[in-house]
Length: 314
Ligand SMILES: Nc1nc2c(ncn2[C@@H]2O[C@H](COP(=O)(O)OP(=O)(O)O)[C@@H](O)[C@H]2O)c(=O)[nH]1
Ligand SMILES: [Mg+2]
Image (cartoon, rainbow, N blue to C red):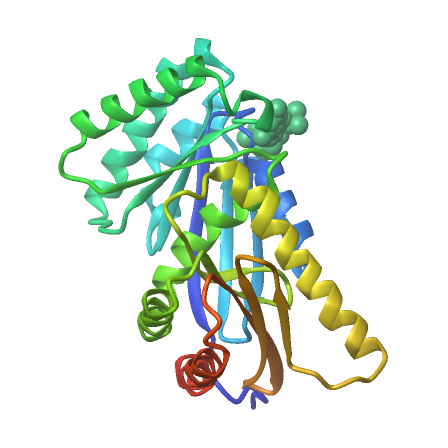
C-alpha cells in the first residue's frame, strides 16, 4: 500500500564536465537555495557519481547526477552508456577561467555527445560557461573565449540542439536560471506561459516573474533593456523583498494576498496564490512591474492565473 495520492514523475538531470569545473559546488549551491537536502548520497565511490534527488512541487522527483570528471572515471562512463539512459537534460559545465583545459573539456564533451547521439537524446544540451564570476562581467577576454567555444560546439554538432548559460557560484540566480530552464520545459507550463505573455503585452510590463516561496522561478519575462546586472539588482532583490514581506505577514497571522507599490513611473503588483498540490499547499507569487495604472484590469487578468496554476499542477 502506498499513501501517495498522485504519481511522481521522475526527472533525470546529468551534470557533467571535467574535474574542477565546479559541478559539485553548482549542486551544493542549488541545494542550499532550494533546500534540496532530502536525499543526497554518494553512489559507489569507485565510479565517483554523486546522486541527489528532491521533490519539486510535490509532483516531480528530480534526480541530479553529478558525474565526477577525473580522467579515470570519464572512461568508465563513456564505456558504459547505461549511466546516461533516460536522461531528460544534460548539463555540461566548462570552467571559463581555465583556458589551458578548453581543448580537453571540448574533447570530453564530444565523447559524451557521441553517447547521447547513440541514445537518441533529443532535448537541448545545456552548456554552462561556469565560473563566469560577477567581476568578469565586463571582460572582453571572457566574451571572446565564450564566443569561440560556442562557435566550435555549434559548427561541429549541427545535428544537436544547444542552449548556453553563463553561470557562477557567486551569482546564485545564474544557477537557478540555468536549472529552471530545463524544469520549465519538463513541467508543461505552456498554458501558464501563454497567460503570462498576454499580461506582458496588455500591460506593457517591465518585468514579470512567477516564483514559489522557495524562490524558484517558474516563469519570467524581462523587457529588452534588462541585462544580467539589472536582473541581480532589481529582480533578485525584489523577490527576496516580497518573500520577506509575505513571510512577516504570515508570522503575524495577517491574511493578505497582494501587495501594491507605486512609484512615479511604475506600478508594482504582487499576488500570492495558494495552490493545493497533492496533500500540500504550494505558494506561488506573481510579481509584475508595469508603467500603467490600470489596476482593476490588471487584477482581473492576474486572478485568472489561479485556475491555470491549479489545472497545470494538480
Ligand atoms: N571562481 C569560482 N570558483 C568556483 C566556482 N564554482 C566552483 N568553484 C571552485 O572550483 C573548485 C572546484 O569545484 P568543484 O565543485 O569541486 O568541481 P567539480 O570537480 O566539477 O565537482 C572549487 O575550489 C570551487 O570552490 C565559480 O563559479 N567561480
Ligand atoms: Mg565534484
